[in-house]
Amino acid sequence: MKGNAREKKILYSGIAIAIVIIIYYAATELLPGDGGSLADKVEMQESLLVKQRELVGYREYYEGRINDAENDIEKIQTLLLPVSSSGAAFTELRRILTDFAAMSGVVITATSNQPEKKVENSDSLIKISVQIQVNCSLEDLVDFLSAINNYDKFLKVEDITINTRTENNRQMVITRPLRLVIAGYINVPPQSEAD
Image (cartoon, rainbow, N blue to C red; front, side, top):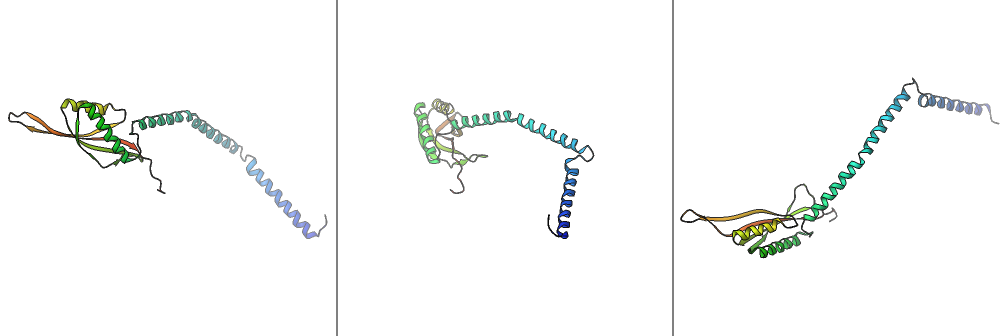
């Protein structure tokens, strides 16, 4: 190797510093200092591995819970009115009530839409309500309410107003019309921020 003495000293000094750094790294990182640090590291790794295995063991449990929740959501979806806009839902609910009234012998004299309401704790469920006035006998009213209760979609009778008056002999008489508020539910996907 050719070069002057100064360059050789710098080169040998660099090699010596590199060797010292390698020895220091090997002494502090690769070799256990007091014999216990490597054992501590192994013990810590083992405990982490046990925890990870436990978490992996819960996987089937949580997958089952997710599947159950998805099945419950599908069942609930089948109970909602089969439309996705409130205008169509009001029309569908009125049609259903008109069909039930015709089957039960109930005469609907007036209908009016109630304000739609978001269902609490839900981003997409909306309650659609219709108020109706009916003329019918109590037996026909029971048939009408039974038809609503037995419908394959979830309909809720929210309010029934029955007006009465007292006759001379203190007998209570039901006056017509009767007023009912009936609600159904729809699923409206939440609007994105771009909408």
